[in-house]
Length: 160
Image 1: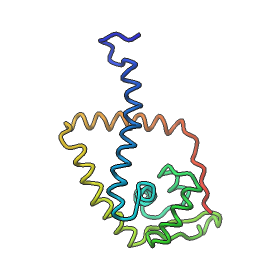
Image 2 (image 1 turned 90 degrees about the horizontal axis):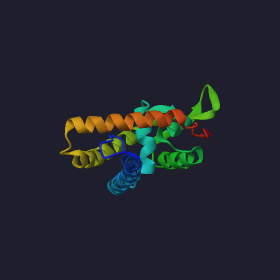
Image 3 (image 1 turned 135 degrees about the horizontal axis):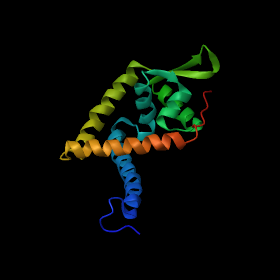
């Protein structure tokens, strides 16, 4: 059993996991409230944000992996984004089973609007946190993310 001077008591380990889960849920809820102005949710914004990180054009399966979405969910979301004119989807010339998704000008405009809403929310939530503490928190989360990425099986994607 850890003592009071133990820098890593079990309670901190448990609290870390619980806090990551709680903060993720609360962050997503707050983002959804903001994104609702654009008839988007975190789930529908996630593929757009992932596609932007991937350079604006990528295979649907790669976007699903980047956004952490399962293939069937990704197909439904892509159908909605295509219908809204935010992305285009075309056959990959090197693999006809795969689809290449590209951001449209309307998709880029929507991303800009998303950032104009979400960025101030993020800034408000982290304002007043010492820069060194924020850097330390980001580093800890990146380390945990890297460890989880190594352990996770690939996301099943459906490029159809």
